[in-house]
Image (cartoon, rainbow, N blue to C red; front, side, top):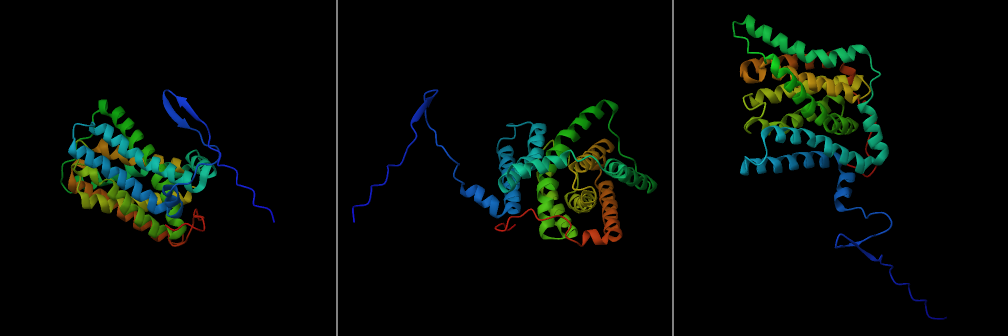
Length: 302
């Protein structure tokens, strides 16, 4: 038997120069890193760890160097963080088909008019109900925003929570939660985490919630998230509905001055909790069933 033929030497692509920097060009697929492997194995955990981890790195930077970034810029950057992480997690776990499906939900507009009305007007109705009850109890109504502030508040509501967060919270996290738990449990879990994400707004100067009561906000956020999840599951997981509701929620809160009156804010939160309980009772079957198809691969955990 003859000697085995020697193995051919490993082909190394020739280096090239780009602006004086040595560049080695590799052909073929890029090796999957531990980072993407981690996201693939545990997409939900990865989503929340990355969102909260990066957020608190930014918060620490602002606390150490408060003049580094203006509050409005910090608010916009923080608001868009869930979207960025949501796109990352979706891209890693589901590739281009998953991203296409996510963006199809952004433009999923063929929905009954009643859901447009619910998403657009319920936040204003709840805010006005809270203010009306507050006035009937003999309290002074808070000052509404002046006319010259309406456009800035509209732009603030559009470019922060409304468009900046929903690809993450309801576009990425909620479907994966509902693939594991029923709608009620998923709504409660996401409501708590969504509320905790706003925690820096309570102690960073210049943020919209710096005068709002934290515990009341957390309770109200859970109730609001239950209601949002109800809309979400009745509209084919349309993200247009999520954008509309989130915009209306933030805009009415800022325009009516509710955030600056702690007791009134508590009344608003209580009404949302009553609304949440009502939709749970009236739509018990929806809230106690697994309604969304699994978005997990066989090797994925949370």
